[in-house]
Amino acid sequence: MSKVRILSSIHPGKIFQSITEMRVSLQIILLLCLLGFSVISGSFLAINQLKIFRHDGFAINNLGVIRGSIQRITKREINQIQSDELISEVNSTFRNVKSKYFIDDVNTSYLQEDNVIDNYEALELSWSELKSLISDYRINKASAEQLLLQSELCWQKADFIVFSVQKINEKKHSHYRNLIILILVILSSIISAIIILVHTIVHNSLEVDAITDPLTKLYNRKYFSKVLDRQIKLSKRYDYSFSLILYDIDHFKRINDEFGHPTGDRVLIQLATLLKEHGRDVDDIFRLGGEEFAIIAPESNLSQAVIIAEKYRALTEKADFAIGHKITISAGVSQLTQRDNKESLYKRTDSALYKAKSCGRNCVIASESESAV
Image (cartoon, rainbow, N blue to C red; front, side, top):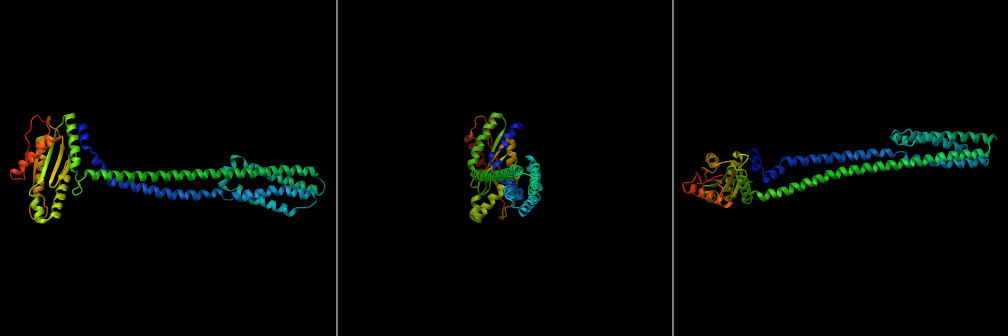
């Protein structure tokens, strides 16, 4: 029977209503907060990561200057033109590049990949040897051939370092590009989730509107027909009792005529609220139109449904509708039989309601039936 209870109590309308209420609002708020956090943190991360490029241009340009100066200095010295000032500038350039680039923490992991630091130190050593040979050459202790050979070796090391730093710069750009793509993917995913959720809310809201009475917010007559048909099938398939209750507000036309339609609408809304507040979880409540209401009561035989109907009748009679006199309702009750279909069940219940109104109103009449499920 628990399986039947679950099947009979879960309806699309209830699911849609729950989706459009607080849980959905909370989901949207959480997604918007996540989006805001992602934008802020992503922007901070992207800006912060720009520091990996600092001094790259400086290093590449100045290493290029060192590379070019090596051959120029050598040619000048061979031509008996001393280049002390240029040598001093290269020495200074070496120190600046090392202090700004090679000992920068942001470059440590990149420099270790290809032993760039070791190669840079080898370049410094080669430059020192070249300067020593220049000094020896000036006092005829070194040959021009030795000077040119060391100059070529030093230039090659400088060229390799320039290429290595350029390669590191390309890796940094690749890593940064991947980071930006990741941030954009995350932001796009969150935005897509918000769009999908909003679309779902709008779609479900339209479906809820399609099955809901706009005045009382109860299910409408169109949805009543679908639920009634489904409950009849479930009742016959799983062999459990099922009853239908129809209500009419007594003398409702007088209320509209005497107090006006706005007051009549307020009475309908208050009665709908009363039915919802005191209804069972498994029951579905509908406004069929005008002053007519219906309750589909699964797992209820005729006597149980009469008790339910009488409870609502008594509650309505005791309620204060603030119009100066009591509001009462009449009810007809029927239990599904094996021979019933949607039309016959409704007809028998409506006939019972008619009898209740003919018997003085403010009462519950049960339809006589045979071979109930």
